[in-house]
Image (cartoon, rainbow, N blue to C red; front, side):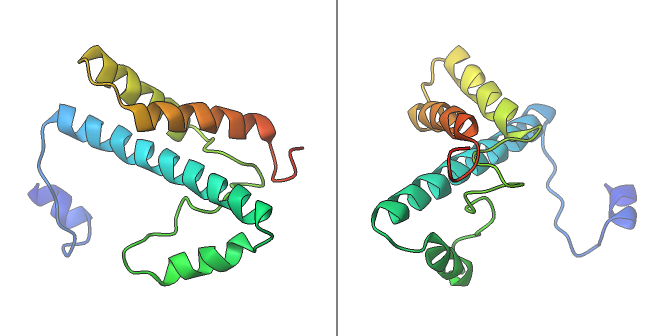
Length: 127
């Protein structure tokens, strides 16, 4: 811990945890980010149907101190859904780990299913 504090900014709080807690934290954060990506995409679709500008809402999200707007933009690198190397695999891992312990994370399961649909859609225009 002391060595780490010398290398990293001393003003940052360091939490000590068991390896399983650290692993669960990592996949839980990525699971939450996936849910946020799906929420942002669904809200974008709702705005489209009402003829409103999603990005005006997005700007308002940025002003709210309780909401971090990261992961709410419906596009990432020009495509919909939570792609990349971590988000997709981590929510799937978290779902499997939960089910293994007989916990059924319905929100995560639905977010993963909807994310798959978004990734298949491609861009905002469906291309």
